[in-house]
Amino acid sequence: MGLFSRRAPEAPPVVAVFHLNARLQPMHRGSVYEDPLDELLAKHAPGSEVVGGGTEFDQSTGPLSCDTEVQLSGDPAETFQTVIDILEHLGAPVGSWGQLGDAPQVSFGRTHGLALSLDGSTLPDEVYAENDINEVIGALVEELGDDADLQSWWEGPERTSLYFYAEDAERLRAVLSSADGRFALAQNSMVEAITD
Image 1: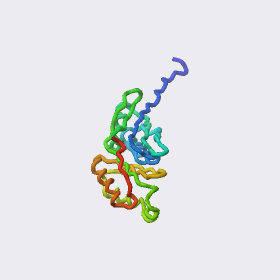
Image 2: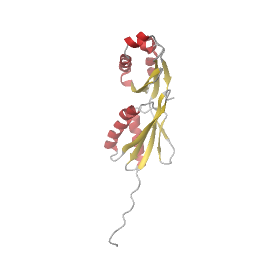
Image 3: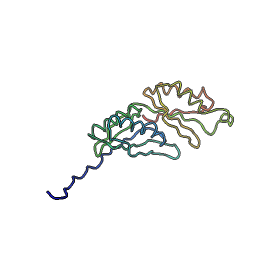
Image 4: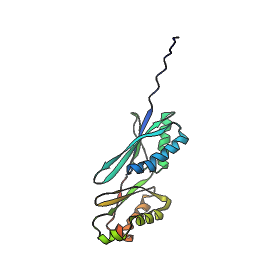
């Protein structure tokens, strides 16, 4: 044996991509999914961690979907499934998928997304001046309770969109559709399915 033994090369880290069919601003991608995912991975798959991510964005309509990259520890296939389980626990929408290397994409997700699109430009000026969007959001969130989450929003040049996700899409649609007749700021609002 020589004076200097050769060390076996370390295997490169295994990184998987998880595509979330969710309309999230980058800061919300972090607060809703990536930060909690890191915390739960520290408990259930030590050594695994979020190492990257990005948001697909359209200048006229806002965020469309996002990706999160996770470095996997231990058995990659087992940890890959753990990440999916955690993301579903956090409310990942249907139409999401994960991919480990060149393997086929694995579909996952359990919630349905609906956007409440508010008219931000054509209502009378006094409606905008005399009403607070936070009151509308607060009332909707309170009514929906634990059955739905407001995961993100986007304020565009003409409309403001609130992105809600729930397992019961029918109840979510009923609550959001009622906003038009209940809140001055929700006049001319539209409800759009964003995951199905």
